[in-house]
Image 1 (spheres, rainbow, N blue to C red):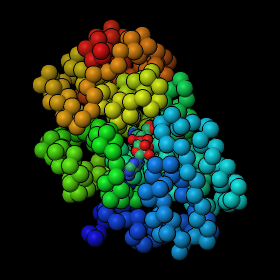
Image 2: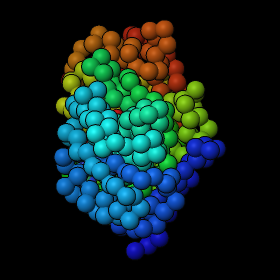
Image 3: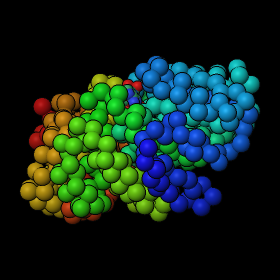
Image 4: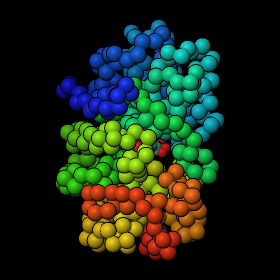
Length: 362
Ligand code: NAD
Ligand code: GLY
């Protein structure tokens, strides 16, 4: 087994490492040096727990007197108060104290909910992200955004709360359904146009290898994505400015998710399509040309992601996007490309947004 590579998130006393490699669930070194505690709670879901919880629990057993487990229902539609409360029920019924360490074993839904539970149980307990989807390994497990959804808006209730560590075991990606792999590729592709054109070149050249789950290609994609995210989060942990660029495509994408009902489209699918809309908006604002817009749209389609959005009606899109967390005083603010490889946040006339929606929905 090759040694894992580490990416450091530099946030002062909240700094932590992201370990990336194969066989990390079983490797003792993955769990060395975590905050001491008598109990651990593994939070997972009905799909991931049968695949990986026994391995994680076995690895944790020598370190904690008690290793508990709570298995949540699977799905974005369960990212809500009721499901969150099941984590608190488990913690309280096991008598877990304020040193208990939570382990989020699953994709972004489990990670976001476990993080929020950790932020609030007894006003804060440590937690470790053990992401098992590509999307969670390249994005959601890193950076400390935790949340649940509200029927009126995606990720509306939550907290910034950093994990003590992130452990990305690339072996877990072997069981990921192809549609979920594509969803994860949306967040990988995102880093190219907003920040790193050399990485965009690399993704274009290696997309087939990524789709075939080539281990070296996946390792590079996860590592480079985490490096970029670490750089951005290290400068702007609580999204005072720069961090918003990581939401490229998300304003449109969140509207698709909320508008269709959570779980209808995967988050990554909505982001993929949302990036096409954000590219078209950037083009209509005169910031990028047709060729670059087409280039990235082609890559999104090659990754198996939708490039045409559902026809919710322009007014419904606008209504949903006004609830976006970036909106200020009811004005929607979009992440656009200021130029290829560089993103920024701007308002846009409703009329231009309507034109984009007319171009990109059916
Ligand atoms: P997900 O958590 O729903 O996982 C996708 C599906 O794959 C689920 O059915 C899950 O049970 C299954 N699964 C997970 N790992 C598996 C494995 N190894 N083998 C087989 N099946 C597996 O979805 P996701 O795409 O991982 O995450 C999406 C969520 O992440 C959204 O709620 C989104 O809002 C959130 N998100 C958060 C951030 C952040 O910064 N906190 C960033 C991006 C996305
Ligand atoms: N996924 C966007 C962020 O973490 O800021």
